[in-house]
Length: 475
Image 1 (spheres, rainbow, N blue to C red):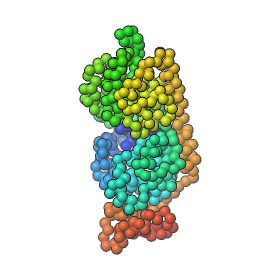
Image 2: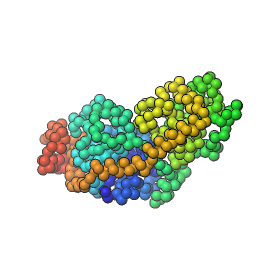
Image 3: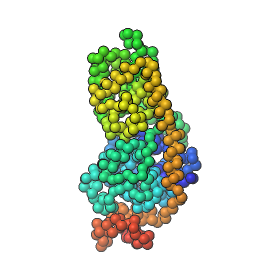
Image 4: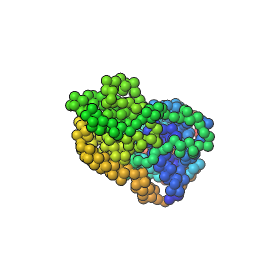
């Protein structure tokens, strides 16, 4: 293809919160390896100003709303609309002249405004949905209604294509935003070697203070593979693992009660290890009476995930139903770890196995664990191999990228060119209508102009479009 591709992500490595930004990096690197010119527009989230990453060319000009995103610069007007960020996008498009745009996580960087700007510009755009990026938006709120009055109803524009990780994610977004996602492509998450810290460090021009980068992995020095541990009767213990955020919605606080139920049913040939950050003190208080059965093991580096999970028999993930996917499920399965997960999560769509499914309750979790404990060693080995074969076929990075690449070639053919003047005409018109440019003595009523301009913009001839937006440019 040899296209110029601009990717937009609220966060971009080397720092990250979750899998969304890691996957954005991996896809960007894949596309660059295919010969595409890839550039990234992101924020300065936890990036040392003395270091400049060379993973991919990155502009960190975006501002965020600081909703749980640490060092995001809190200068945004709104979660929905940010004139500064639209201006930065316009700058990137004018300078880089991308032939397509890929949108990743837009939370906290003004998603409504960015999507509308790309709609008005008509640039071919791929929206890659790995989570509900509209989750924090109040669709019925005054702010959203105001933006729709100014810029027209919110929808997935005709110049957009959509890739989603699961049907449940598509359904949730459609219901939340009252929109229909047409012609989307389902692609699951994937398992790769993950982004290694050494790989990131090697890509920097300036080496940063790595002591500020490292996550606590003090647990790792005493980490041992539990294979060979036995219970009082000499039976080899079944090894369960939980690896996710230590938070109520992830279901981790159900584990002590589930273990209690199993103990009351005379099961003692098992152990549960828990990894993750979050409400650790709450967890430690809940598990203090279950020494020998539940262990909090701290955290591990992202690149160690497959190695750590491979030391277990089953993964328990009693998370909330709205889990868009659940990458840890397929990471565990990839290593032959039987995943037990809440019914309805995105990853579950790719397994189709009732043995693995539970409700988000201690009783249901204990029943799922009991199913594993009831297996003979031969049956356990067969089940582990079964999920491993499925995962390594369906969630292999190279296989997923083959499908992804075919989708790009099929839906983003040809070239796209936009005039630099038009890029800023639309940006300035949006800023004016939103109230971020001085009105002066302009006689036009803002609402009236908004209706005349934006609600029928896509149907107007180019000459009329330019005449209208020239009003804003003249300010």
